[in-house]
Amino acid sequence: MRFKKIKIRNAKPRDIKKIIELEKILANYHHRLDPLYYRSGTQLSLVEIERYLRRQLKKNNVVMLVAKKDNEVIGYFEGQINKRDPLLIPQRTGYLSSAVIKHRYRKLGLGRMMFERMEEWMKRRKIEYLELTVNSNNKKGIRTWKNLRFREFMKGMRKPML
Image (cartoon, rainbow, N blue to C red; front, side, top):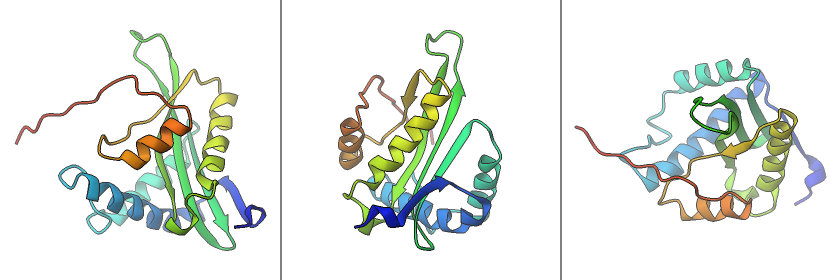
């Protein structure tokens, strides 16, 4: 694949419909991992997602990146800066909340390029740590994030209440 034909840039309002399509791909993937926790792409409220994305686009502490090839959005990353609990030492952390590349463009280095762009954005804002959560069943995701130098530091747990 020729990367010179791919542009990575900040998302714009006109990209939202195409980002939603990528979010549906991500939702389907996670739903297969844990159908009791994640909605599938068909279960998502497109109105809610669009409203959420439009709100995120307006925030100064959020970065939304798209990778475009010709007129097609083929990748999407979203991250944000969080102010932490005063009990914690790192006070400014970044959080990678969404990362998805269309299937036929995976394993070609595009995800790494998008991640590096996000990482630059975070560094310019003096972020102390970049964090993310990954489902314990998502072996592929865990491997990917470890390859990008993320290390496990906490275990999340949940208990059904209904």
